[in-house]
Length: 215
Image (cartoon, rainbow, N blue to C red; front, side, top):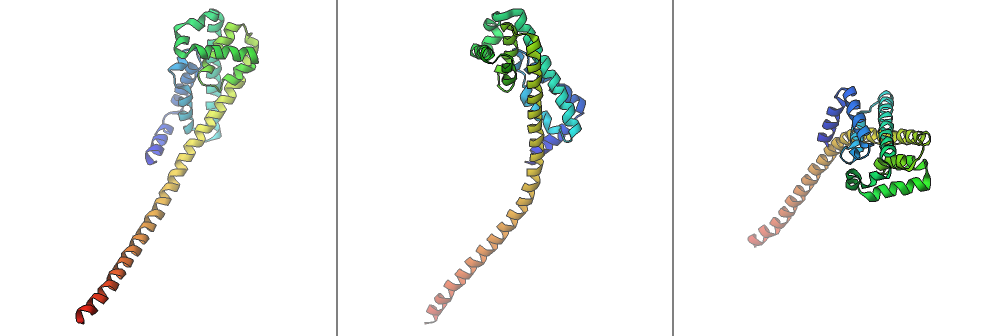
């Protein structure tokens, strides 16, 4: 547990602009078609969010991540508008899984722009929905508000989870250290009681044997 909190404290000690820059870049990449397959945007966001220790840091990271997520979605949308349905047979989509492309298209047909918001919380599919939206002909005027709403909600949720996880790890360690002293004390008491009981039992057995010898 101490190693975990030491690692989190080390991360928190890094320059905040650098943490924000890396997190924003990975988020943008993760939200762009294809790159999301190799860029750990969501994991990086959760880890970076452990450095959020006050409302100001929360707001700054929330803004940076939201903007980068929307930018990544917009890149995907433009790629879909440019290449259309041909993207389904591209190497990138085949690597991600054409079934995810089909799922994204089906979601858009059933939900329209609302699908852009919903997909933000669906792994893999969220990487393909923007491009699929562009390929389907969904207007950018309808796409953008849904993308912004999804990015704002998604980033707030994950930053909140990461921040709470970092605080919880430190709290658990402090509690764990206190519990360890209690456990150690109980172990000493139990060992002492067992030792005295065994010694008493041995003495009880020794007395009759001595009496038999005298007889």
